[in-house]
Amino acid sequence: MRIYKEKDYDAMSRRAASIIAAQVILKPDCVLGLATGSSPIGAYKRLAKQYQKGKLDFSAVRTVNLDEYKGLGAGDEQSYITFMNENLFSKINIAKENTNVPNGLNKDAAAECARYDKVIEGMGGIDLQLLGIGNNGHIGFNEPADSFADGTHMVTLTEGTREANARFFASLDEVPTAAYTMGVGSIMRAKMILLIASGKAKAQAVKDTVSGPVTPQVPASVLQLHPNVVLVGDEEALSLL
Ligand code: GLP
Image 1 (cartoon, helix red, strand yellow):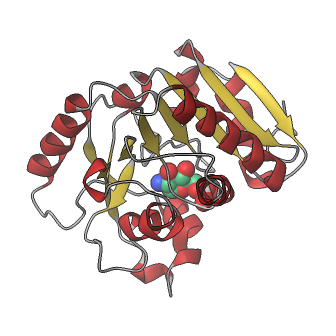
Image 2: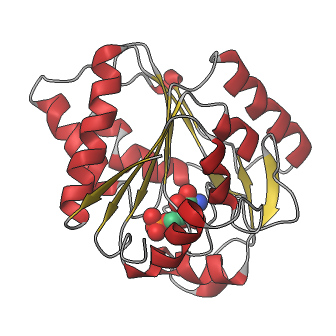
């Protein structure tokens, strides 16, 4: 694992954006695995700016997002598809049909998860997977569990995760209790993984990820087994390393 310790959120975002930009320049038709949450917003802003300056072209890029809340869709302000449209897709020249997010409105979990796995497979593999990290070490919405899940599956969100994400909703009650998420296996099959982390609240999870035992109780710890992981964190997030 290569680790970049950056001063703060802005510097972390600059570094992450430059790594993603390099991927797009080196392989204009690359497949990007994308993430939501506060962590990637700064990097997405920088990528959009570079596109606007004519330095990046996303016309051949395809994307596949990690996860979506069950029960939310494009019409919902807090859905991850809305997040992606607002923070990135509407600001760059990516074709809508080249972007993929699990369909949280599909009530048939088995069908939606099977469909999404086919989407990922059909793309021929993810070149670069961007990941944030939950306070409990979750990646995507792969919460601490007894085993690592391979493919897309439905998860019940932990109370801690719902509380951490409640800031995006009017109240805790409105935070969905379940989500569809890409599995750890799909994440691990990406050629390169870019993990970003910012703030004190992530410090323990980052420490457990980098130097703790590999265990599904800390889902991100599995990244120790991946040959090409870059961790970009700010000083606070890396303070326990
Ligand atoms: C959510 C997302 C994760 C994200 C995590 C951390 O639970 N499903 O993909 O990494 O939150 O979010 P944040 O970056 O806002 O701290």
